Structure formats: structure tokens, C-alpha cells
Amino acid sequence: MLTASLVIDPAFVVGPVRRRTFGSFVEHLGRCVYTGIHDPEHPSADEDGFRGDVLDLVKELGTGTVRYPGGNFVSGYRWEDGIGPREQRPSRLDLAWHSTDPNTVGVDEFMRWAKKADVEPMMAVNLGTRGVQEALDILEYCNVAGGTHLSDQRRANGAEEPYGIKMWCLGNEMDGPWQIGHKTAHEYGRLATETARAMRMIDPDLELVVCGSSSSAMPTFGAWEATVLEEAYEYVDYVSAHAYYSEKDGDLASFLASAVDMDHFIDSVSATADAVRAAKKLTKRIHISFDEWNVWYQHRAESRPPTGDDWPVAPVLLEDRYNVADAVVVGNLLISLLRHTDRVHSASLAQLVNVIAPIMTEPGGRSWRQTTFHPFALTSEHARGEVLQVAVDAPTLETEKFGEVSALDAVATRDPETGAVAIFAVNRSTTESLTLTVDVRSLGDVRVVGAQTLSNPDHTWAASADDATSVLPVENGTAAVSDGVVTVELPAVSWSVVRLGA
Ligand code: AHR
Image 1 (cartoon, rainbow, N blue to C red):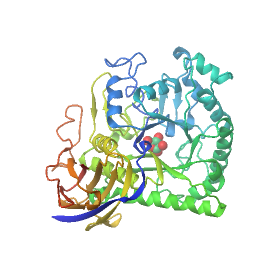
Image 2 (tube, rainbow, N blue to C red):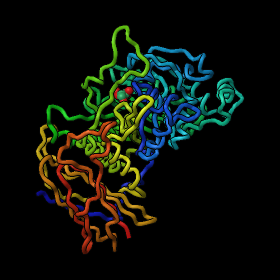
Image 3 (cartoon, protein in one colour):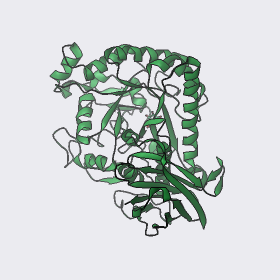
Image 4 (cartoon, helix red, strand yellow):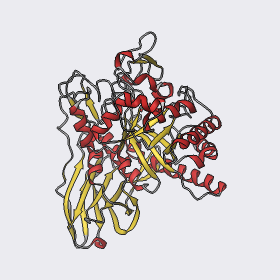
């Protein structure tokens, strides 16, 4: 049995809990859009063809923003294909995923869906095969009130009011050789700068995201951010970060410590952005949009795109089935994002439906929650107010990938208005449970309002359409407070939330 302790003090605030930390991502990829969010034949489909069961799950997940339409897809996308009368929209080859896109869903449909889902849209422009003009065109279509060719086209297409989309991604993963229109850091930095400058001529208050690295393992990681920001710093607000994790070769211990890499990623990008800031003698800070993160088993059979002459519409792609350990890692990655709320102002779990997703659907049939759904939904529900620094004293575990790591990872939030506190904690040990004590004397008189833990003796258990409920977060009856100290037992390979209140 391991033991660890935490100290929480409401005076040590990292920054606000941001709804944008709980963002997600809808890409034209596999079955995310077609038969995912959009399935006109489904019994729950509304007048626009959107699945009502999926909309309910998206709300239950507590999603803040949704990034659209890609991803790798956006680097070959012609947004105009997806507007106007459906029967006149062209089908196009999607080179990124070797598929055909019928363009049944485009920007107007997505914006209607985002309204119904009550999420903030985050739009990406194509800087792979396209450039400044096309970025200006979609911005005009979406955000200009009227009286111009494209804004009047939007109105004619049924959206009288401008969409007022604030957040815009300047391309996607342009550092990746797999990206259509891949560029060097210098080439991309110039294009992103000129695109941003021009977009700000239409609306100076946009929030613009420049592409950072596709992973911390990219050979250009660090140098890419420095070069791009040397060009673009003055014109953008965020630099993006993308990271996917998986258990490799049965090394569960390293996998459970994946948040160590996310911490390193965020700290390194922050330091790089600050170095550019110092050299440029500026006061403005660049924040991080961690707009793709998740567990992703990239080499599974269902992750292989079609090839040759086969260009299917909405093929089964990247439909990972997540187990309990995957959910524990997702919960831990959210802890890392919250801990960095001073720097990470936006994040997107990639993706939302069917494609490496917390929500799964059958075409025309059932929908269900994967294991990863639960830590995300509970964190989104209970993280309120401010993120607090926590002082952790915990034993370490040896991992092959990261060396010694803390057995416990945790973060706390506190709502200054209600005094409600939530402690999110992960026991990374693969074998031993951990007794956690939390010194909460500085909070005054508090009681345990609730505690939930996700774990299972078989951490490889995964949800399916037939059984999505055998393993769910359960009430952790060990959580108790006495003399200003909370005690709770955390099983091996587990994620928990402990809630305190007056
Ligand atoms: O989310 C799946 C893919 O991962 C995205 O299209 C791309 O941006 C990333 O490489």
C-alpha cells in the first residue's frame, strides 16, 4: 500500500477554470460527421439530419468548444463546396483520409449543429493547398453582417445573422510531412503571418491559432515554434500543440505516466514563446491551444485508411475502443491541462464521435459512451472557479520511458462563490493502491460531498455497444474528512474526483 499527501490552499491560484479547456474536435474523417453527428436516417434525427442521441451525449460530456473541419482534412478542403443547395454540392476526393466527401455537411450545417449542441465553434482554414484569399473568403462568409458577395450568400443560404466565430486555426499540423501542402517553419511562418494580418483587417478581435508541433517527438519540435513565432508572434494569440498517447509493447507504467510528456510539452512551448517575446521586447504573451490530445492506438487495423481505387464515403477509420487504463490516462491528461490553465487557454479532445472518440454510434442505430467519456464529463462538470496549485508529496515509480515519476498526480479547483472544491487524482501504480491524505485546513469547515473513482481489477475492460455500463465511475466510500484532513483510498490504475463543500 502506497501513501501520499497533498496540501491545498485557496490562496495559491493558478488561474481560472476555462470552459475552453473542455473542447473537442469534429473532423470530416471516417464516421465522425457522416453517421456520427449527422445521420438523417436515424430515428432521433432532427429536421437538419442531426442525431438527437449524439447531441444529448455531447451536452452530457460538457463540451466547451468544437474545432472543425480538420485536422488533416482541412489542408485539402474547399469550404465553398459545402454551402448552398445540397444537390449542387460536388463530391470530392479527400486525400488526407483516402475517402470521398459528399459535402452534405458544410459550414452552415456545422454552425447549426454547434448551436444545438451549445458549443463554441473553432474554425480552421486551409493553409495547405490554399492561402490568404480563401481564408478571407470563409471569414467574410461567416462573420461579415451583410452587403458583400459572400456575406449575402450566407444570408441567402438561410443564416441571416453573422456567425461571429472568434477562434480560427491557421492551418493544421503544417510541420508534418504527411500534411497536404506541408511547409518548412519559415515558409509556414510567413504564410500564417500574412493570413493573420489580412484576417485582422476584417476583424481585429479574432483569436488566431498558429500551428505548433504535431508532437513533442517531432524532429523539429522547439525549433519549429521558435521560427514560426519569430514571424507571427505579433499577429497571433495562440500556438497549437498536439499529442496522442498509447500503451506500447505492454509498457503500462510508462503509458500511465503520459501526462509527464504533456507537462514537458506545455512547459517547453511556453518557454520557447517567452524567449521569442523577450527577444522581440514585447509584453503580450502567446498562449497554448492544445487542440488535439487523446489516447490513440495508431497502428490498429481499423486505423488504416483505404487505398488504391477505393475512395469510400465515411469509412470506418480510427474507431479505437478504449479500456479503463486509457480512461485513467485521459483523466490524467486533463489534470495536466488544468494545472497549466495559466498557459493553456484552450484544448480539444480529438475527436468527438466515432473517430478516437468518447462517443460511439452505429449507423442508424445505438450510441454509447466509451470509458474515456467518464473522466472527461466528470471533470468538466465539477471543475469550477479557479485552479489551485497543490503541493504533492508522493512516492515515485520507475518507468522505462520517463524514468522516475510520481505515483500520484493531482490538481484541485475551487469555486470562490460557493466554496465547492474538487480534487482530481490519479494513482499511476499498476499494482498497489494508494492512501491519499489531503490537508484542507485552510479551507475551514468542509465535508465530503461526493467521491467517484474509475478503476477495474481488469484495466483492459472496454465498453461496447452491447455493454457500456459494467464498468462506470463508482462512489468511493472511503473518502472522509477529519480534523481538516481528507483521506481516500485510490486503487491501482485509477482516476478519482473527490468533492468537498460546506
Ligand atoms: O485527429 C486525427 C488526426 O490527427 C488529425 O486529422 C491530424 O491533425 C492529426 O494528425
